[in-house]
Image (tube, rainbow, N blue to C red; front, side, top):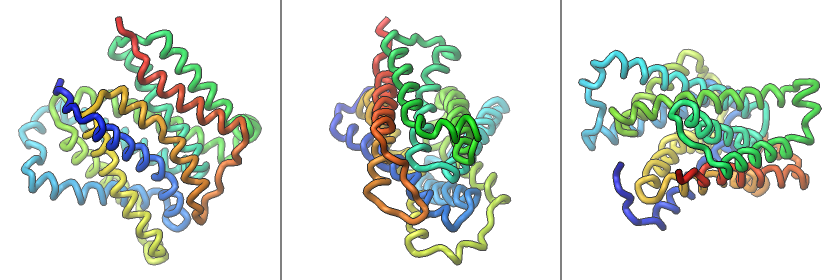
Length: 304
């Protein structure tokens, strides 16, 4: 394991940048989805990221060593992880289309929490009592946040409920991707895997994309689409770099604030096509419980 740089202030800044970029991403995506369909929007997210990272790694001579592709096992792991990430992006954008940015961000908090639980099963990691308490706090927060919509979600299974189900499935596919990624990082550096995954995603979404509506995009929507592509690349870069300066638990704690960034941004940045969640006391408390539970689950690890 590489030692930390000691530049903890810079590390916290990078983690905060990641939380901000991921927090405003669903708002930007919603703004694009008023004109562009989900598959085309996601294609551009992948393509812009791939088109930017390729020359960057080429100049730095850090393109994937072709000798690594001689291993059938590694190729299979790369393909499966890439396709799981494709499923994650697809389910996320379709879930976002049917719900709200706040709901989407809260549901995606399931991903890191489920990854920690998967670590108990797959990697035999220990889960402390305080982490279990954090997990209970997290689940209580989700129930509190969505309690005003229980009838729509569980009784009539409205479009909103279907969207939440898609988002929960998206979080699950991300966990599968992340588990395989833990094995891949033994052979590839993060930039190499991202290069492969971005091109897998771009190629996977291309056949399902339609470019007819591009002429209808406003200047603002073009800016939002470019931001979504840059966000895909830059936010992950900030996240990876933050891990070089501060502990993973601290990075996780900062990034757990992402739903609050979304919640505040939706209220402060009015945008066509976005109807904010109705903020009641129970929903605000629920969002706070989700964040607190996420932080507890990520940071209060067993010492034994």
